[in-house]
Length: 376
Ligand code: SF4
Image 1 (cartoon, rainbow, N blue to C red):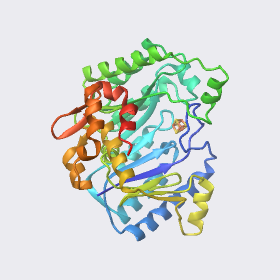
Image 2: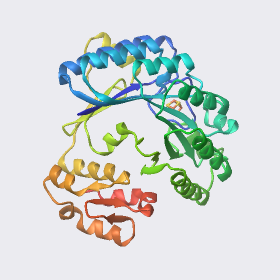
Image 3: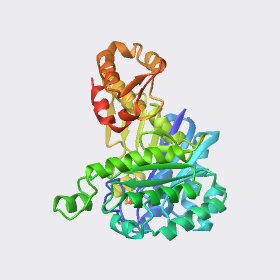
C-alpha cells in the first residue's frame, strides 16, 4: 500500500518566512508543468505497476493555483495508472483568495474529500508582515464556501511565535479556527530558515520576534486550548477531531511507502529515498525528453532506517510500536536503546506504556533532545 504525493511548485508570491520548494511563476508554466506531471505518472506506472494507493495529497506551493482542468486531468491519470482504494483520502492544499465556489465544487466533483488551507493568522497586519496574499475576510469566505460546497474534512494551518504576535492575537486565531468548525488544525512555531527575507531581517535586527518565554507560553496555551475544544493532539504539531487525523501524514510517520511526483518531490520505498529535481524548468525538460531521472538516490542503511523509524514514530502521540519495531528490525528496541530509554524515562521525557514507547507532554516540548538520543 502506498501514499501518493504530488508537488505543485507555484505560489502567487513567496511568503517571507518560506523556504519550501515553490516559486512565484508566470501562469503560462502551469499547463506545461501539468503535462509534465502526467508524463511522470505514466513513467512511474511503468516502473512500479498498478500499485495500490491509499492516500493522495496535492501539496505545494499552492496547488489551488492550478486550473481545475489540469487538476482533473492529473487525478484521472492517477486513477488510470494506479489502483485507488475505495475510501482513498484525497487532499488538496489551498490558499484563501485562490479558490472560488466554482473551483471548490470542481474539486468536489473530481473526488477530493479533504482540503488543507494555509491560514497562519487572522490579523490582516500580521498576514501582510508574513507576505501572505490573503486577508482574514478571504479566509472566512473561503472556509464558508468550502463547507457550502460539501467538504466535511477541512484542515487549517496556523503559526505562532510570529513577529509582533501577542498571546491575545494567537488566542484570536485559535478561536477563529475552532469557531469555523474545521476538523483539523496544524500549528507550527516560526522557524527562521536561511535564504528567506525573515532570516536576513532578523540578522540585521529588523525583525521583532516574541521572546523565548512568550513563545513557550504560546506553545503551552495551544496544547491546553485545543484539547479543551475537542481537537486531540496526535502529532507534535497536529490536532484533529476524532477520526479526522490526516491519513496521508500518518503514513509518513508510520514509515510507510510513498511515491512523490512533481519537481522537488521524493519517493520512499524499500528503504530507498529517490529525489526528483528541484528545478521546474529542468523537470519540464525531462518530460519533453520523455524520461525522468532522479537527482539523488539514497539507500538507507539499517542504522539510518532505525533512527528514522524512531524519530518519525516519536513525533506521534502513539509513539513507537514495540512489536512493529521487533518485526521490522528483528530485534528488541531495548537491545539497542536500553540506556537511552531509561535515561529519558527518568527525566520524564519518555514513557513505556507496555506496547508503545512515547514522548510525555514534556518530551513533546523538548522532542529534539530525545530525537538526538536515538541517533546510533
Ligand atoms: S503559500 Fe505556502 S508554499 Fe507558498 S510561499 Fe507561502 S508558505 Fe511558501
